[in-house]
Image (cartoon, rainbow, N blue to C red; front, top):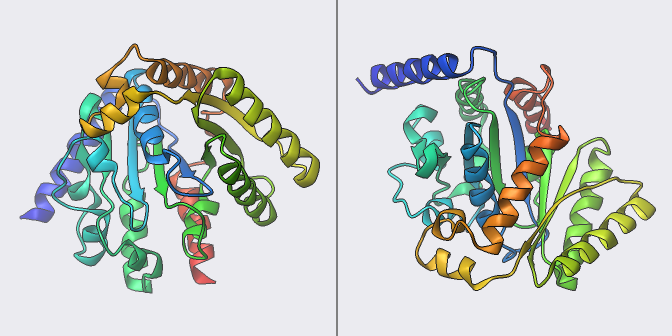
Length: 294
């Protein structure tokens, strides 16, 4: 009965998508990372995703932040199932997708996420099939990764089409962010990196931080980074977190919300959001399979 319900739900989702977008979608998979914890990575991806949703894009967030999975908390939702449930209980991915404000879709991380990165072949094949069923259903899938990097999580990171790197102006955060860019570049120099400076005390500080990072990565790594936005440090963000409501909804006219809205416009205007036909969930899965075999 559950399988029939899942199949019906998938069919209805596809029909709705095709009616809204007759052309085939090419889903872009983006990893959101940080060099260290506590920089507001998850908060940014939630609010940025809501901004994209408001422009008519379909977005799915998958929480893969081991030990710190909190996307559902930031959205003020209680999740019935998690990403771990899908893997351990062989559930359809459509059964674990939750819907939040503005139609934003997300999959909660749950506990024991570390086991997800160490799946056996049978579990991995099931996982790939579930991911494949998302093809053309979403414009963007954001993987909210844990802080830093491990040998296992790097497989997901390096399989994505783009990487959003969130940092703050603090020296330790910048140092760790540079280390992240260095690792990514050594593994795959062609993988795009998009930088977001969070909790900047002023626009000047945000610009200065990004300028320094772009200069250093270009000089020592020969890596060009795209600077997307600076999100100001503001007490409204902390109030929104306590209220378990994204700040773009809690206070739409606040400085952080305005900055996120501008970041969304910039991202869509630059063309970095575009994804070529070969860049899809299929290509993400293909790369991931190659890493998981090693």
